[in-house]
Every structure is written in structure tokens, then in C-alpha cells.
Amino acid sequence: MSKPRFRPQLSAALHLQARKYFRTLTSTMDFSSRLQTLTAQTEAALDTLVPALPADAPAGPARIHAAMRYSLQAGGKRLRPALALAAAGLAGPEAQANALPVAGALECIHTYSLIHDDLPCMDNDDLRRGRPTCHRAFDEATALLAGDALLAQAFLITAEAYANRPALAAALLRELARASSATRLVGGQMQDLLAERAGTATASELDFIHLNKTAALLEASLVCGGLVGSLPDAAITELRRAGRHLGLAFQIIDDVLDATAESTALGKTAGKDARAGKATYVSLHGLEASTRAAAEETTRARAALASLPGDASLLLGLADLMLTRQR
Image (cartoon, rainbow, N blue to C red):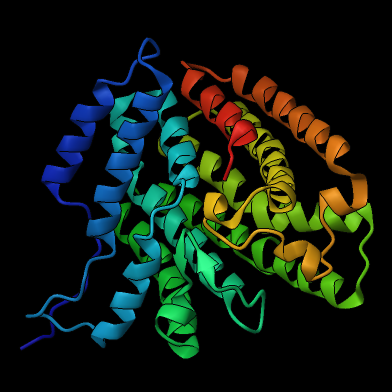
């Protein structure tokens, strides 16, 4: 008898529910209500796409699944799924519902990066999303494997969810792989570590870190949503441009918050970058110039988003939220 396969797919009922809810999203609704809907659908999708280990169909030790879900379900802003869903929504509610799997995949990649970023060999942090980091709640080896598994899960989710649209599946997988590769997310993390060890970083090196460690996945979120929505090439280019500027703005604000906010508000250890001697926008340019730079990058992102076909008000609201956030 063949072993049951572990297939992370959305149920037909969940997909229908998402279509129903996304049809209710209109530009006349309050922004927070629209964002709440995106977040609720993302949480429901993640619960399905990264399920607890089925008792009747073992797919590996239960501990690894528990660690994956511990970090994935710790909350967080869910900005990357929101950006993907909002971009797909430019093509309508059907496209928005169809983007749920890749939105979940993006959150898996983001959570993997956070788990690894917190490890003792990297930033050695104790707090993430308001509770103990994965390696503190479990152990270092389990956390390392949980991150590995979430990265692999992202590609499995995408490959299976879009198998009936092979050209789309290939484009999405290419985008996710590029964003998380040694030339983008991992490369940015490596440069961040090298700069910390050297104790110095130039402005251009810092931009490289931010554009890759942070902006790469935000850029991919917008592009993946646009791909699911079959948006024209010109729109994909503008989404990519917007993601680059939003990513820079997001990380600059992160640097500002690390220097000014409390750990309880951030949900992670505040002031850690300064104590570790890390190069940040604040340490290189000062608080006032950093705040101004984030606003300028957001203005550039908004210009790209405003040029998109369809109703971009949700995307514009997300851009504003990313600039004014307090955590």
C-alpha cells in the first residue's frame, strides 16, 4: 500500500470562502477593514497550507511540524501576503483568491528567514513577534530545520497549487527562488554579517543589504500577485519598482524603530542593532535624515503604484501603513 502524500493545498471550501470575502472588498470600505479581510484569509490559508501532522498519515516527526507552526502562527504583520493579494486584486476577486497559495508561500519564506536570522550564529535573539524565538522555544537544531522546512514548503505549495497553470507556476517559482537566493535575501544577510564583523559599512553597502535582505521579498510579493492576476508586463515592471522602494522604506523605518521604540511595542528586542555595532540608516545618516529618506522612498513607491491599472487604493494604503507603522 502506498504511503499517503503530504499535499499542502487549499480546500475548495476555503477557496470559495476567499472569493466570497474578496468580492466584498471595495475602495469605499475602511482601509483597516479591507486589511483585516486579507489577514483573516491569509491566516486560514496558512493553517491549511502548513497543517499540523495528521495522526493517520505520518509525514515526519511531529516536532518539526510543531516548530514550523509555532513560528508561522506567532502573528506578525502579514504584509507580504497582503501585498501579493492586493496586487492580484487589481485583476479582480477571482485573481485575489487564486493568489492565496503563493501569498502563504511568501509568508513561509519570510518566517524561515526570521527563524534563521534569530539563531545564535546570526543575531542571537530571544524575542520574535512578542514571544520566545524558535530556538528558545525548542532548540537550535530544531529551529534550523524548521526554517529549512518552511523554505521547502513554500516551493511545494506553489508547485502544487498552480500545477494546472504550468507557465504561471514556473514564473512564480522563479520569482520566489530569485528573491530568496544568494544574490538577494541570502546575499543581503551575508553582507549584513560581513559588515557587522568588519565594524564598518558604506552607504552603498548598506543599501545593498536593505535592497536584498528586506526589499527582495517585498518586491517578489507584489510581482507574484501581479503574475497571478495576469497583469501586463508594464504593470509587473511598476510593481517591481514599487517593491524596491517600499522595501527600502520598510527597512529604514525598521532601523528608526530599533533606535527609538521599546521591545514590548516592537515584539522583538529593541536597540539590538546599536549594541551589536551594526550599520543602520540611523547610525550612518542620523534619525532625521533616515525618517526623511523613508518618506521619499514611499513617495516613489506610491508613484509607481498609482500608475497601475485598476483600483490601487489598497496598495497605496499598505504603502502608507508601512511608513507610519510603530512595530
